[in-house]
Image (cartoon, rainbow, N blue to C red):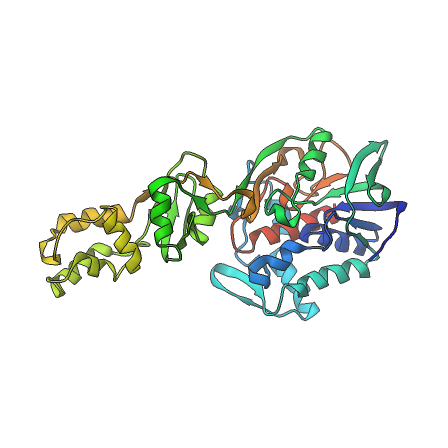
Length: 399
């Protein structure tokens, strides 16, 4: 949108041309503020582009504060209440962007995610905003009521500095810790960032076993003491993935077990008992293959996790009950996660105790705002993090 060196003043400077930063610039511009968005990347909104397999899972109609993780679970309530999924949907409808609902309230574009990026950029343009890509922040200072940001394209002065540069997830797309550096510079606390919505890794025999059935998936309930999710689990060459695992990873801490109900809540005792009555001469593995993928059943047998009986006729009711108990409370202890490389979002971040929940403005430094992923508000898988980006940006623009 613009090129060349600059030394200028704007009402609001936005660091980060992602979902939150662009949405803020458009909304603030509509309110009459002059805005400039800068980003060190060559292209804007890359996370929007790749999300949802290229169709952008832009929100979730079931969004509520309970779908977010934060040291302060109440912080997100205000912003989420004042800009709902239906508010964003209304903007898509007016733009003519069609969409559809998949499972669990997840909304996707019918076409490519580029439609949403184009909408965001057009809205910034229409509101008189400026976008500067390939522009890195060098220093940030505040004198009186004015911030001066020295960039590789020159200096920019502003009275409102909006930090929307995201977290540490997916570094190959340019993720940095800039938001945390700025926060600390101005006296803010940062909850230690950690990878979230990320696959688990394993070592030793577990890694070898899971790799041997890589690609096998099944519906499960994955849980720990903090949360539980009923979705699919996928075995990989490194360990475990799939929606249920990604979800529970956000609540996992190193050294802890995750409990997996591989029977996904089915009345497997009744089903296996009925199978035994109908097919007493068939093998237990054959019976289990009516409940679980065949390759998973073979792995469980190889690991010695099934009773050693030749026929269903030889297994007692108590043994069936014990087997079902084991499979519905299957313990796994990950050695770690795949880390920032594949994490979809960042958990932790800028401490919300030092931000206004109504405007996202710093309580320590007037005119300084933090929005989007860099804040200690992390959504579940399924469009919730985009809704936080829209809602937090809207709150700051209207603050």
